[in-house]
Every structure is written in structure tokens, then in C-alpha cells.
Length: 340
Length: 266
Image 1: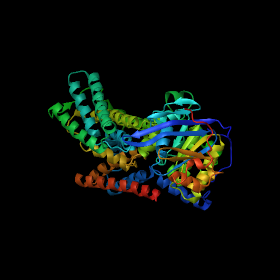
Image 2: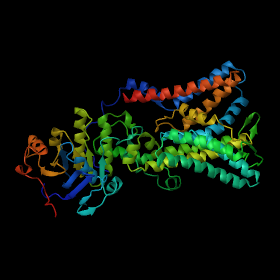
Image 3: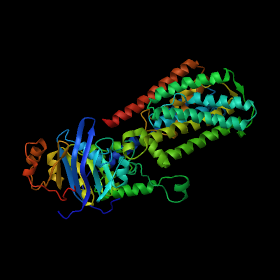
Image 4: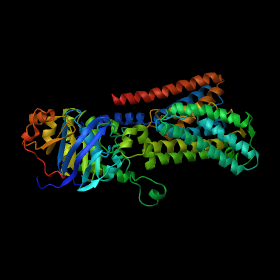
């Protein structure tokens, strides 16, 4: 670093903003914070359901919403990583389901540890294949993971002959249990979700790897010119996402102790919805897990609330779809606003 | 100026792409603490020369000397490790990241002690402090090193890229048309910044199309023509129209005084 002070060109571009403008600047900054929008949306949606239904706003239901969020939330953490590098993983829930049926079938033979290990291996291997397809073979992530979705879904059905496996091991169902206080349950699954959110948030904001993930998503060219191995970062992201899908599989077996090859089909898109509503940009390089955490709650609150309000599940899907479009529109609006 | 030490030298460099000869027996020299402008018509092979010097291309023939030692760069990373930093025309900065993050991109500092060792925690405080100090030393005034680069003007972004290169380049900074996309006032600021980088002791290679800019800040001018060095001239002696005439072949390079320092080794 050069250290001797010296006069030079003025690049301040207009100097300091006048004081009267500072509150406006503060408001603008707050609105531009990626978490502000999702948080406001969550509060508004919860307020609406609280006013329009009698059953939404009570401790038991709110606790239930949290439990319903756990699997989607953990999938969405992996999805966030992939979306931060301007990718997308359409197969995330399918990979998770594959892990559940591998675990379920092997656990039937009696060896729970082996089942657990093979489930993890299946998740990591398939996720790493996604990473190889995107980096080495330069396939668009959308196509690579769409293909993987079809392959893994069909593969899981072939593997199981379309039957499901009941889960009986306490260890495999651990994530569904946990201390209870009256109507509130603190499941180990939800604790794991929170812990994973914090850990991933740390990795993304406090480590060089996290910085490189954002740089690769923001501008792969600049990252490469600065000596970052772009493909290595992308591969690490897809593979690490696989670890999250595996942990989601564990949580899923805790919530519903059945390994069903045709389960969780909506979760692929739900996880993407959670990430996008949470303010992460599909163009990469912007967003984070705090937003995804809130985005997940929005997705679940919407489903839960609309059910409480007695609205058909097809309308629920329309509602979620509108929300995704609004979220992406919000992102586009801010993006184009800054560039002009 | 003639007692200047030669930092970087290219001798008999050639590069062919199939049948196309992009560079043939081109020579190059760069002395410590100077700004060497590289000018040439489109297709003269400037880019090929710069790519070879910055490690982006491997020459078919010839050699590159750094401080008198022959070097063989196979990638920009190797050139960078040897002390040569390059600012490319585009894609030089990550716009969603702040100024400090950009200055340290790919070279992040970790916290000392267990937090850095076991938890790989970045030392953001230290990086911001060093970034601010470096920007101040170069006289680049921005509101904060925590500002996202996308909030900066084109000139400021280029300044960040140049600051980054000068922070890490120990010997040579190569700038590929740093003012190409800038307005008059911003160009002025970036030119001042380049002078400031030179005055801090780095040798600067400046690829530039704009003759007035070249004559304003260059210490010497390398004129490239038909894949090789036509000559090197002193802008205080030679006129801009003569440089253009040599570039286009209208004037014989031998008709103006050469500003070369070192005899070209055989």
C-alpha cells in the first residue's frame, strides 16, 4: 500500500450532501436495504390475516407456521447460495426427496448410520453433478437443473418402485421433536434452521469465500481478473447447497416420518419463491440469507393464512405467483433506477 | 532521465494466430518511475503486446525481462504475483461491492488470532482503514470506502480500478485505455491520478488513443506499427502530428530523434 499523503485529483463528484437532505438520504437507504421490503411485506400480510380471520393470530398457529417453514427454509438457504452466483436450482427439493428415500430404504435394513451416510452422499453427489454441468460443461443453470429435476424425480421412483418407506428410527425423526411449552414447540429442526441461517450468514458476510461468492455473482469477469477462480467458487456453491438439501431431508423426515418419492413437489419452486421474495436478485451478487429467512416465512404465512381464510389452494398458488412477479419487478425497478 | 533503470523489457516478441501475424519481433522497454504511452493504429498489435506483457498471452518467440531477469508468464495471475498489475478496459470492478471490498478483492485480509485462523473471519476494519489510507494517499476523494461502486461515477469507478492496481502493483501498472469512456472533467481527474501513481514510484504503461492526453502526461511514447515497435519518442521534442504520421507510415521513424534508453540486446 502506498502511504505518503499527497494532493491529487478531486473525485468526490459534488462534495457532501447538504444536511437537510440527510433524512431523505436515510429513508432512501433504509428502503434500498434488501431486507426492508420483505419485512414490510411480511408484517402487512400478517396484519391482513390477523384482521380477516379469527384463527390466524394465536400462539399455536404461529408456532405451526414456524414448523411448516423449516424444510422450505433450509432448502432456500441452499437455493440462496446458488442464486447469489446468478444460478438457479430447480431440482433442490427433488434432490432432498432422493435423500429421504435412500435413507428410508437403507434404514429398513436396520443400519441407520449407513442410511444417513448414503443419504448425505446421494445429495452431495447429485448437487456436485449440477456444479460440474454448470462450470465444466457451461450449461445454463436453468437447463442443467431442470434436467436434473426430471432425472432425479424419475430415478427416485424407479429406485423405490413408487412405494414409500415408513421411518421408525428416533434418530431419523429427531428433527421433528424438541421441547414444548404449552402450544409452542421448539423443534430441533427449527433450531437447526436458525443455526444454519446464522452460520451461512457468517460465511457469506465474514469470510473471503463469501466475498468471492458475491463477486462471482455480481461480475464474473471482474472476479476472474482479480484472480478469483470463478468456476471453483461456483462448484463449491452448488455442492454446499447439496449439504443443505440433505439437512432439509433430515428435517422433512422429522416432520413427516415417511420417505415418499412423490412428496415435496411444490418445494422446488417454493424455495425459489422464498429466495426471490426475500430480496435476492436472480441476476446474482445481491441478497442474502436474512432476506431468505423472511421470504420463507412469507411463503408459509401466505399458505397458512389463505387456508385459515378458507381460500382454495389454487388461489393460494395464484397469490404466490403474483408475489414472485412483484418481487422480481421490485428488483428490476431498483436495478434500472440505479443504472440510469 | 537517461540514467533511469529499465524495469521491464520485451525483446523480439512475436505472436501469430493461425496465418495472422499479430506481432513480429516487437521490442519494448519501460524505465522506473515513468509513464510510457503506447500508441498505434487499430490493428497495429498494441493489444497483443499488452496481453503478452500482462501475462494474458504467451508469446511464440522472444522474451520478457523484468528487472533484467527473464520471466515466463502463463497467466495474468503469474504476472500479478511478479508485481505487474493491469487495469482492463471493462469489468475491472464489482459494482455491487463497496470500494474497500474492491480494493481487496481476491486478496482479503483475515483477522489475526483464532478468529481469522479457525473461523476465517475477515478483518474488515483493517481493510477499510488501509483502503481509506490508500485512497487518501492517491488523493482520490470519495465519501466513504463503504460506498458501493455502483453509486460512483464512471471516473470514480476507474479511479478505484487504478487505485487497486497501484496498491498491489509493486513494479508496473498497465492501464488499457483508462479514459476511453469518460467525459472531459473525469478524464482530467483520472490523468491526475495516473501522474500521482507515477509519482509514488511505479512504472506505468498507458495504452491511449487520445493524442492530447498522451502528450499531457506521458514521459515517453512507444509508437507501434505493423506488429512491431516503430520507435520511442520524447513528447517534449516530437510533435503530435509527427507521432500520428509515424503511426500511419507517412513519416519515417528514423527521421525523428529516438528516446530509447537501452540498446536492444541481440
